[in-house]
Length: 362
Ligand SMILES: Cc1ncc(COP(=O)(O)O)c(C=O)c1O
Image (cartoon, rainbow, N blue to C red):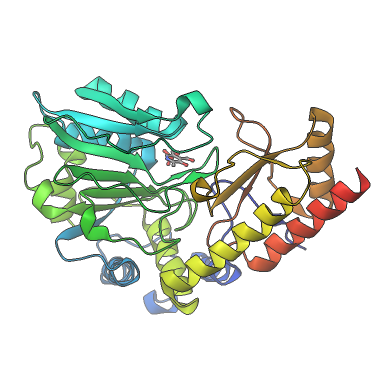
């Protein structure tokens, strides 16, 4: 079977060696006498090793300091939209949100159900096709944390340098670009990411949280939602998503083989540039969602064609050429190429060739 090139926004492409490792682990692991990864206890010695290795590899790749816990939780990024305010948003304190699209807005709306939350800046008026200008913008004095979204999956915007809010805790949803480039983890109160784009399959949410802040979190909320308990119990307060965590471990091994985050960031840059070059050089045939180059995502490249008929023809032709899942998000339309870490450069070059050929015959 020839596999298509998978441009899906998430769950998304996994490297062949990761898929191969997962297939073997499902059928039986030598280390546990032939049992499947799906069958073993999260309290077994073997799984302790998986958990420890995954944490250690994430720490090494991202340079996560000991001040920060590495947790493997469930409920996806949306779960974090709720868990964050439950833990940190006490009466009398506020949470600020940089509104860069549907996901940021979702996080804000959820926080409002728990406490006092407000929008600090928004790019809603520009259809979220650019990032808001934060020059001269500062959170109110009673703000406990500011929430940002590093990469806006739907529109293809990405902060190349994440803003700094001084002494106010910075929480960042890195669901669609975690592990795609180096970040200074020590700057963040919490980083969270559903794994299903860059880090593995759906089912596990990576949460990297400052233990000093966790120590101040509420303990009068249900136990399962307390970051402090999940840290104390090493993400095993309840049964963790063992298979998804195993997959994250394989992805981390793969990333190390690629040379780590600086190396993968260079490839990601190259992949995105290759597509933007065709878009920008198309004389307006391909219209980019995001005009400002410094706001453009290296993970999701979004563009439009001159009319609906050509969108349909572009997608149909792409499918025939083995290029899958290029349809834009239902709220934004257009074409979206999601080119996360595990998308190889030659997959992107096949799209580039297709785009050129499609324009030539249009
Ligand atoms: C940036 C971002 N945040 C949050 C989400 C929602 O993630 P989940 O489905 O894991 O809740 C997504 C999903 O695509 C996303 O791209």
